[in-house]
Amino acid sequence: MDGLAFVIALLAALIAFGQWWTARQKLVLDLFEKRFQVYLDVRRIASEAAQLGRLEDAGLANEVLARGRFLFRSDVEKALGELHALTINLEMKEPSAAAEMNEHFKAMIPLFEPYLRMPQREPWQVLKSWLRGS
Image 1 (spheres, helix red, strand yellow):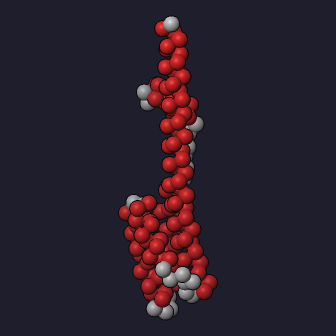
Image 2 (image 1 turned 30 degrees about the horizontal axis):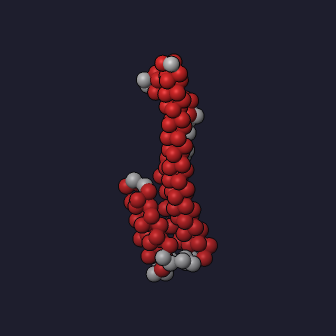
């Protein structure tokens, strides 16, 4: 009878681990999608500036700055603020603004990379490392 209780407890623990893992993966994916959308919007801003010399959606830079503030650390937040300032220069028809935005976007790409990587491990690898204590 004690053996059966142990097996049931072990199964319950494995099911709980599986549920935790699934919830964690969902959180990671949701965060990735939100961060990737900010990246795509920044890319769109730089692209429109270079191709059109203006932004089709003038409020997009404000929106990206607001969303980015809660999704990234200060490094990307600072770069988003600088991009926002460049969009103001673009709207004021400053001649060099589009080129500066393009260069700023290129400099931002390495800042985004650590946030958009998804170095996932398989659940059994995590479980093995926990059991080993590392």
